[in-house]
Length: 508
Ligand code: C2O
Ligand code: CU
Ligand code: CU
Image 1 (cartoon, rainbow, N blue to C red):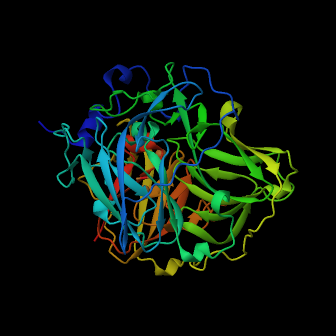
Image 2: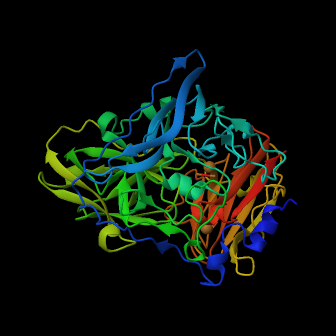
Image 3: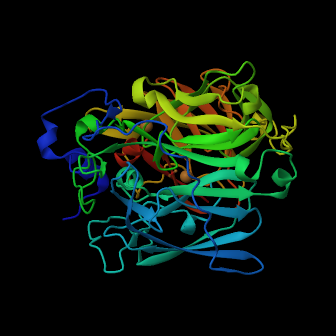
């Protein structure tokens, strides 16, 4: 007897275990804190590290070739203790891939974990077969029972797979992460995420901070078990068969330790000059409202880029709200502080330990060669509503009867195509929510036409993820170009995604 995913979900076999069914029927599953079972580390003792840049194993005129093994490893995240992680080449975050617009990247990914993996380049304009569709598994070299898999279109690889990223897109801060069907939340939590920085000439020619003053910052929250390991409420901690978390964590898992590039509340010594930070929220479910404490007399953050690369012109913010999967490229000007100042990057969305993120210590004077030009990129035209053909509406909500996160009332089903946009067409997608959901489309970058009224302060530029608050609606303008095939769109709260809030579109 075979069950479809939908049937399994309505039976409570996906996302819910029998012992939890009766214990807690929460009508509104909010994201929930999972407290660590070990004393929290002290903030600002660790030093911020920047993930190592991955070296290609080979290059030719058109392509850089990379080899990465995904494996178990140990990392010292808490001082003097070892945390078992799953990492790309055994590191968390994974090594940074530096790519150039117009040169392709071929990534050979070997799976040395005991469970299947899938790799997705988030923000990548990628052909379908390399996009990391959730059932396009790389199962372990020794095999893995996938008989329960219902997806006849799945492209299963054993041991390894080559992903091809054309990089025919503008410079942008992208990231890669695991996307295994039903298990993305726990696998990213264990460490499967890293940066992919795409550069181009237009960006290189701008006088922005560069070199050691251009820093990728991956922020995520985690909780730790008594033995120092990552704590996650998986129903099946081996992540082999049963997916999901107990009902009370269906709204999302929040950790109580904030990691930046894998270190708890680190600090960084800076000069009194401008720095470019490429900020990524790689948390499963946590939103941050970033601010500087003390605030400078002038501007805290000058935003120069969003998910899909540089903005047309810089935008000034006092605080930045960043939801899971979003990126904000910002410049902070530390010349606004006196030498000796300690400037904390805080999270105004929370108090206590998770109200802090990292600290900058302004320790030296340097001449600043960098500048933020008033025009950054020429290729962010104002959205042209008139060019759009079809309008589609998608409702993102929790269905209490099914105990599932859904789109238009239905949990994910790989056999159901939710939209078939034509290649080369432009559409308006109207997104509506019940609770807060950071919504993400694969393949494309879009422009925000409206967001419960006018586009919000954090919707500028080309986006691939838009954060909607409870009961909000947004219209986004999406162009489907270059690649045909099957892709997903989903909520990037990873627990919502794993528990049904994902749909399919096929470019035809
Ligand atoms: Cu980061 Cu399917 O997404
Ligand atoms: Cu994506
Ligand atoms: Cu959601």
